Image (cartoon, rainbow, N blue to C red; front, side, top):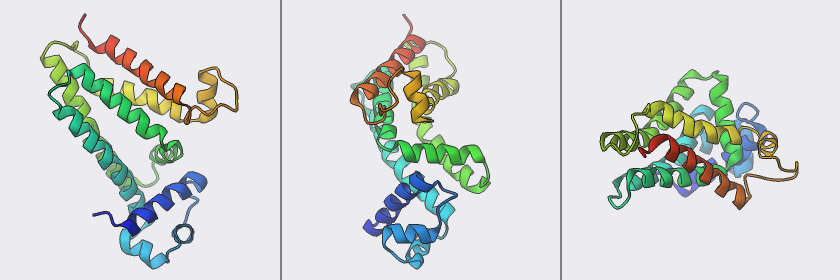
Length: 206
């Protein structure tokens, strides 16, 4: 159960990690940012690694609920479910680009094996729903016989690429340096449209 105080500490940690990075942040820094004592942080989380895992699980659980809701919706076709997942993923990730980058930087570093394994397990649980929808579309013969796992990698990898660096993203989409793609509605819509076009072209049997 997430208490108000626990959620407050996690939100403060997200801000702190986005500013200073996971490695550059201490429990004492976090306690100061959240205006709580160190003992309270340790009571709720036990360590900085466990705190980071809790944040990832907290954020992923919201998305998991959305994914389950989409998969269970019998009024949507498989491709409409893929579209809905794309819309939700893009909206969720663009809502906090700094934390998304911190998360992936930590995974790339590979210094904290146990923490990384637990975070990956969280991601795997969420991607199972997407894989299930793709496999169902293949079974119904509305989707081509694609590789479900690498299809997910294509989708998530495209999102990760534009989130990797704001400067790189601006260069890739040929905009001015002061343009902020992560807060711009037109870029969000452009990214969603692009991902849908890729998935429709790749998945659908014509």
